[in-house]
Image (cartoon, rainbow over all chains, first blue to last red):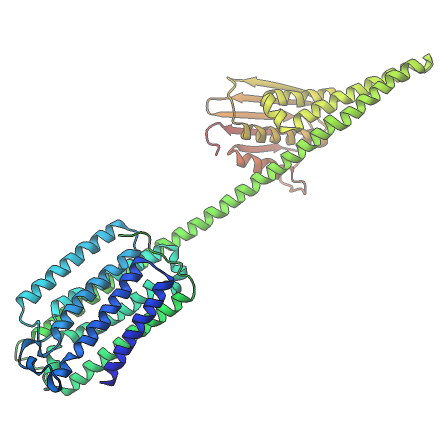
Length: 234
Length: 266
């Protein structure tokens, strides 16, 4: 409970430092990053509504599909994967990579929508195929970004470039949490309390790490004028 | 507890797929990353090597430029300053010739002749020192001026022979070729104690072959001396991509061969 509130706090801090960073460095990808962090804060705060079902005025939702907040999480994770897949595109110069990423995110969106429509798990668990595919594509996108970074001289200034921090955070977070999301349906029942405890520890730990890295990245990059600007606008 | 009796849960299958996919991606990415890193490193090394080469070339170029500038300055000084002074001396001698008694007339006249010859020498020397003049006159004419100067000095009998159709050479190379020959000729004058010098320019289809042969005392090419004449000549020949060699033995004279390609110059 406290750890979950702490995650919300970190998200809000990351959002606010993101806004401050955007004041200094007004670029399009940074704008989208800040908007995405705002969506994260709203979505996470919104998902607290389940606490009001048992004790508050939302008791009429009891017994309906909206009793659990997985639907909210599923929609958010779809937005999140699409964001992370496309965020690094702004820092690429290779036209072919950009086209590939565009197509792959299209495929991802298509597959995810199909999974939501034709699987019955939308309200009771996180979508497994969408999670696996999304994680792989985020990995792919970041890998292309790293290769591009290696080829350019920006590698020498990497500690001052925001997308690098974002990539590290996103990569660690997605690789670590996806296996647990596959088993998210086990979280609802209380057959295995040790799994629930493990799940919570890993999810909370990786969230703490993710937003700490973001906040650190924003602070470090806003100390000096960022030398790493995107090459073009889309 | 996982038992091997029942079928795998769908989550378990997905987990296996997930790990295989991640490991596969990771392996491929690592390999690509290492290859990209290698390429980048090689590119970096190549760039550094090229920068080093460019630096060396620029250094050599600027050395030549400084030398040419110095020679030009000396040529101006000789022509304008010393030449003018000597002309004044000539005028003074003319005045003197009318004023002195007849017994001195012969001597003054001789002095006047020497002064005139000195003026002539200085003029021709300044011509071959100034690269603008060398360029204006061309390689052949400048070489002829230089050889005539030697003849006038009376030290050695120099002949120039030209064969083949004369081809135009780009001006930067022309100056360098001329300076190589000039260096060789001045060495002949200073050290060889030669009585005859034969210079042959053979314009071939692709190359200009130059040979210069003297009948002087020669020297032992295996002994390295402190003088930088040889080094200067060979480094200049390298600048214009010319083949350069000097053959000499003690008592048998010295031969210079220079083969300059028209096309390969940078």
